[in-house]
Image (cartoon, rainbow, N blue to C red; front, side, top):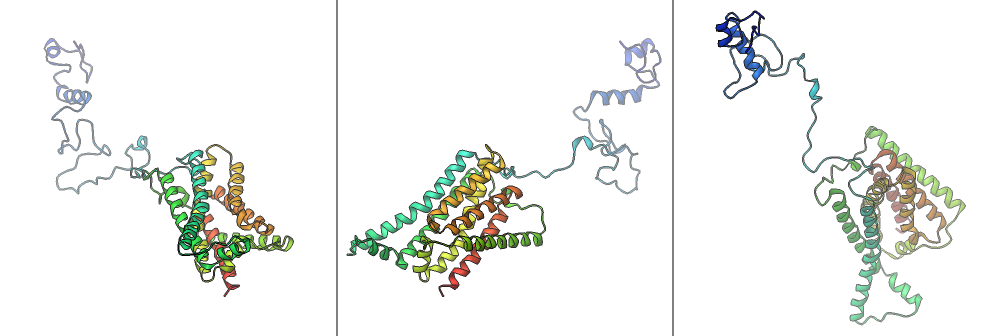
Length: 350
């Protein structure tokens, strides 16, 4: 039993001890204090007449509003203590959370599988398409020559070039589907919100100057290397372009619009991100650069200047990816470089 008043501290009489824990003078105020101490009970709520409830006023401790006065704003007072809750932050929709581009959700194993699938699609589909075409033509009476020179002439037909290019487009589409499955986790994440798509930092004008400057540097290196190491023979790519006829335009379209997007996502996006989960920056740069250049070696074999130029291009693009954490500048540089090269090639054949 309480011996003194909880409010003023005066010793309680016997009747006051029996009635409660406060003296007669402090009874009303102490009852409110006791109610507040007990917390919010069922039926307790906001008292508009005094501007607060059992837990106190919201947003400040100002006086209650008087009749006829302007209603108080629902915004928190400047002096309100909201610091413990921190700054307001936007809540992302499920499945759209960002991640560190150098620590992506996929691992090294998935990255290698994507790379192998892309290489297999580029190598297998065109050859499979050509074999199907040969079987079809043979069923119509075509005699496949045994002489190597005649075989080369057969495969140099514009029709074969068209089959190769169209099947390469299909290979690119299949590769994009595989990439989408990996970077989105089969749709659990947003592909458009992947951080590799964001190039944070420079202004648009600075980005444009950067891309043009890098492409200009790449062509300077190509010219210098070409003057020191002239091409020793005609490459497979040169033969394809030379004998492709009007298919050259489709080849140029492929080189400018689909190849940069697919290759940058495979090498600088999925593969580089997967490598960074298990290796440091520079080992990852070197591995990705060599794998990208190695895939192009069969096209440029024997043209040593072309091999060095493609290796330098790969190394440059991978360094850009490492420094910017984005594949957007890589795609932009790749597109512009291939576009200028395609214009030069087409200008020599028309």
